[in-house]
Length: 343
Image (cartoon, rainbow, N blue to C red; front, top):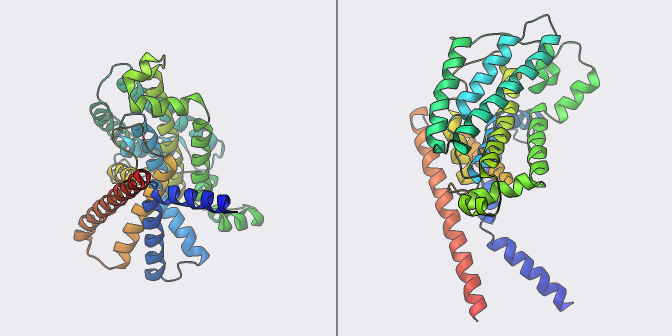
């Protein structure tokens, strides 16, 4: 009995001392504060609205996390997202349902090309990720502006299923009811989690961490580091594609500037999620936690009626405090564990 109690206590101590534990506490605190400040927070409509507002950042953060863990960084995610929305709405034509499926294929193909170009620049040509993705961000923006100088375009009716099923004319009542309980945006997030879960169970998932930790050592052990970095960029493109589906379903149009604010937010959310910018350490699932924390911060600022001019400032301050507090907690926990081992 004592052994079981000691084992349970040790497991709890290891969990509490884990450097990701403070992020869960911060998330719980942000959740509780938002619930207090937002009226009808637990109403189904409010829950669906919050999920919809959080989804794009969650998907982009998870994709960005994969690239950062592999030792890279993608400054082009916002422009890539905008380009994909412009491509999708340029291919589709109202009244021709088949163009919706065609648009999915074309948009996904463009997303793969985006990942390949970034990956080849980083992996094969060994150009620093910051330079490659900074340059490609302007390329994606230029193409998006060529396709959509101003926001516009159109989508077929069923494409709205990626945002809200009840908006689709003629959809079965049972399907609409299901969409009210489980929002399509949540399905996209779960699909993104499934993608990473599958990848993490393969050699690619392990190699991504190995290359991010030490690219030279990984190469010496026989890992094709160039191909691993390309794969990381391709996985990122899948997450960008899912976010683009949501935006097109939500707005029914494309916008060359739609993703601009999300690039740095995704990077900040990755950091809040505890992923090292040096690569090789962290969890994509905790990147999701970081995106939720960042999203709740935005909600709290909004409900606190803070003027728009100060919202960005307060967001930055809160993020720095959250990161600093997490690091201090981790250091103190490690110190306690080391002291306990010595005694």
